[in-house]
Length: 574
Image (tube, rainbow, N blue to C red; front, side):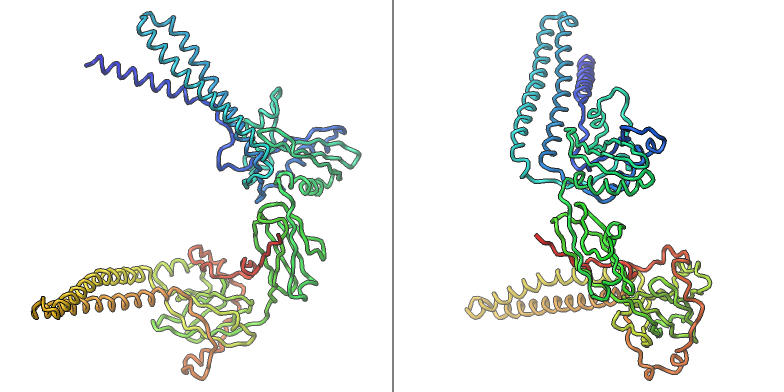
């Protein structure tokens, strides 16, 4: 018994050791789902070893990486994909070769370590089996490599993969330092790089000539080089010119052309177009960018700024139509009417996260600035405008919290609008009504099959009665049962509709109350007396200054500076 357990323990330890040894493989740096990793080396000095030129040798590649970092992408062609697969197969072959060498040495060592001829023969047979498996894996690896090489003839027309460009260690200021005596390609592969920028600088007085070259891995082949001349004291401008020429090679795509159509005509005179924060020259309506995601921003005097981030990856030419919206000036008066829940009128009112004034029993209306956009506002009962830091505590204590909405079409200078505030329902109440609507639906689903079954039985008994096969009493029983089941189903349906209405009504309380035009003649005396009382000196305060991290307006609040993608139409020109 103990001998058998000892043998099992030895076998387990031996199997674990073999498994661990077999797992010692050289893993390639290119894994599925990884990005296109880019880095740079300090540039070499061709001539003019002054302190400024030596500093430029590190500043220029750092500036290049800094300007390339962001939303740039690289199109991984089929040839690059094949390079990666061939490199992985080569890495696997090296690992298999090491395993084969270890197994051969272990087999040869059995002759010296094992003196029992029977055991020796058995162990050698097992070793030969392992060696044969490794050799078969190597042959299969070589066959796969030859098959991949045959695909290079059609590589140019094959599918491509888009990868995001990432900077090594996510730090553009960390340049690679090639260890002395180490070969460049092997060092780049050990870092898992997909691209490496290297270059040289030649000095001509106050000017320098810079050559930058892009190497792609795992092949280590050159994707191209660019040369640019600039002043030593204008390295940022020099780097911009290098990036413009080098980025198409890094992205591995043709440049993307964008044509802008701005309307109305009045906005064209002062229109400014920014692409990734860079202003186009005056009067320019076309931009050339690299393949990938870019942020476009359009500004004009007297119009709202519009901006959008778009992924330019479907074509090489785009037409972007931008309808500019004119800014509106002036204010409108908003009267706050008491809701059905009789909440206290004392509190602070906000419009688009900005404080507009204090409401009390004497002040029912406040001025709101016109911005040409929908206004989402808020009223917090019991909040003093001078003590904004208490807002979070008041809301947690259950203070009245109201939301309202003013459509752009109602916002006219001098307009009088009203909104009837309604307390937002508690989430627990909404959840309770939702549970009851589920119960009503469940009751209906249980009652319907019984009603259908009873009605079908009634029809069958009725047919049998008229044919003379059923008694009158059976028909009366089937009729009573069908009527009862139908009545229960109708009651369950009514109960479900009633609870569904209660749930929808309660949940609709989360929506802001919409403002409408005010008719003063229909107001009672107390409300009419409170209209016109302005609370001055509060326009400069804002909701952000109150420290209300947990009292933010929801995403329906529009800041007027961001454009929805539906406002910025993009047409593809194939």
